[in-house]
Length: 87
Image 1 (cartoon, helix red, strand yellow):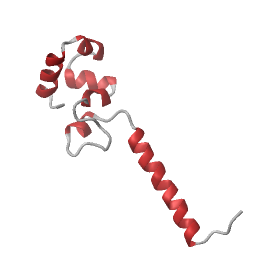
Image 2: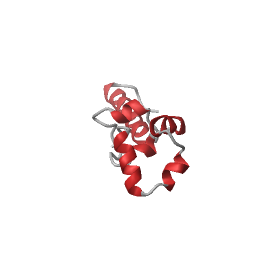
Image 3: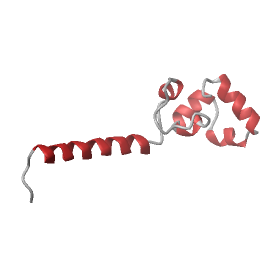
Image 4: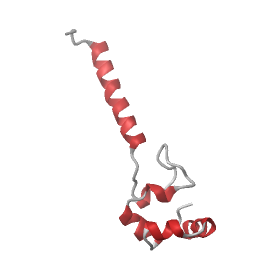
């Protein structure tokens, strides 16, 4: 085991920061309000905001189930996202 000193403490702090960053980058759902605000969370694709919504937020925002939305033609999906502030 190595002694605890200032450089060891710095390494421990860096490890925590890396874990925080990885957790944020690996997050795959965000609240609706967070996806409608700018700037977007890091790593979020601005052209596919709907994929980051929970099923509940998805239905609330787009007023349909995810399965029904996915059956729509692409142009209807885009128009719906624009109308609901998710584009």
